[in-house]
Image 1 (cartoon, rainbow, N blue to C red):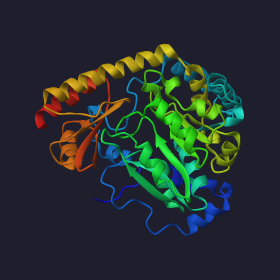
Image 2 (cartoon, rainbow, N blue to C red):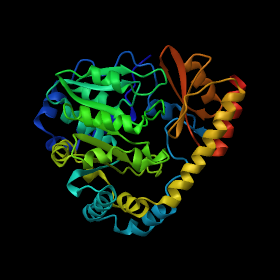
Image 3 (cartoon, rainbow, N blue to C red):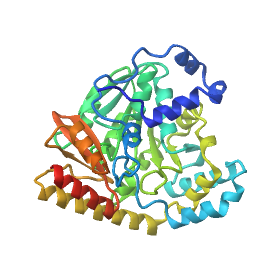
Image 4 (cartoon, rainbow, N blue to C red):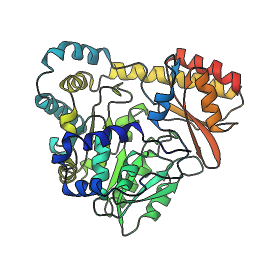
Length: 390
């Protein structure tokens, strides 16, 4: 299967190769001048966000391939954008400070422990650059979210991929055993993408306390808001305790900001300062997006409503799969993964013919579909198409 550059790679590479070159560290200049001969995993067997979205027909009926929140931003966010568009000629510094203050107050940390980004993507890139600059390896799950490991691999890092457990969760025990003297970082996506499985909170906290004393841990909490108790399940407590833990959060999922691009990383102040040298992400946020984030941060009424609608779509999907004789991995996020009864490429093509965009993978000896949870109307479109080919 041909390797395809994904959307995040395209955007970030474009940024590197245009006006931002003069701001980059010397080792990045060297890496760009002498790129690795092969920077992508030749064994990859799944599509990318970009390839799926760009291959969709204009009249797509159900966009269920990108884990977006189909209910959009909250009314407060939309109003803030409308009210502040006239001030968009201003640099965003004052609005950024307001958002950082809100986050710091809610999480019980210091503002200097927070780094803003246009979504979490530039922050994952910053971590990849920082932790791969001296070589070594990064330990991650397999499958898990590929953004940070792929970027690190493009430079100097070796990626150690640890298979999931029998119930498709990240294997913390095996990941800890995989750490070597050359390990620079452990990357954990929780809930995990693409499996939508969540780790036991107590087990992950114990892992962080034990392992972070030896190796930094980066926890991607993009989907944490979909859990019943996001604040309790987050590893922010580890940061508050001074452990060597970095956390990435994004407004792209439950907040509905995938196109507005707001995110942040939290960690020890010294690490945040170091990562800040590898990104100008804060300057990439628009003032309107930041003000929208300020307006809707912890808008519990909206968040609970969007989550309830997502759970209704999930329940509907489970019922459809069960009626058609399919099993699935219980989901802790806004997407569901289930094993297919035909080859993944064929399934994806047949669904696309019927106006339904999904994602497919192959791992653990099986072909899989990952379906993002859409509106109920979109889920009904999926159900109709699925029944025709299942």
